[in-house]
Image (cartoon, rainbow, N blue to C red; front, side, top):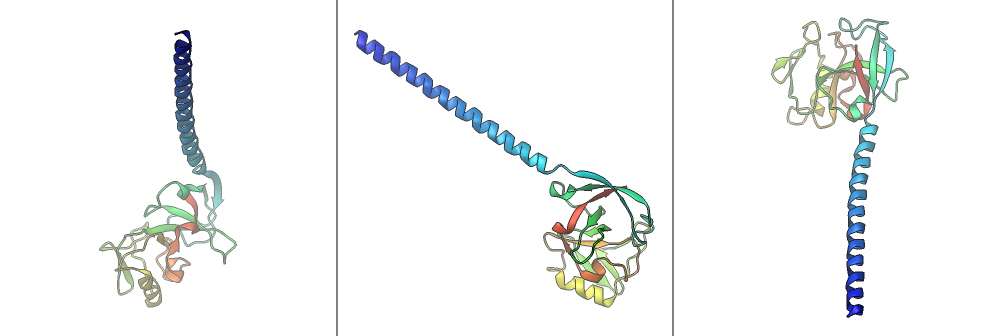
Length: 186
């Protein structure tokens, strides 16, 4: 009888050990999830910096030489929203550009003469003036639309000046999200 009791006692110890191992595994798995979540949050940390506006393409919203505060990496963890002022990088330019997000994926764009309609409303700058689109810029942008809408991961970026000669989407088309370096907080 002593032998059976000892065997049962060993089984109980084994069962406790098994429960301990299972509990430890659950705790480690949960901890791993939390660390993974924390690592993801860490990847979304932005770097704050001061930048100077160069040029007049953002007048009247921003002036040449004006100092602005920027959050680099902002769009790695935040959605791009119409109206944001973004910092953009291009392989063909040394300087970063500061431009406004004029349209986001899913927005409908159509052209009426020299003007554009965004979701049925005239596209205007910060002063309420209608942007001017040349026939060339309208053609460039129209070819990139899908059923009249901005495609996924593409953005219309605009200077604040209304003239069609501004170096923005009217000259080179929509830009991909990976060109957006950060957001300007002015």
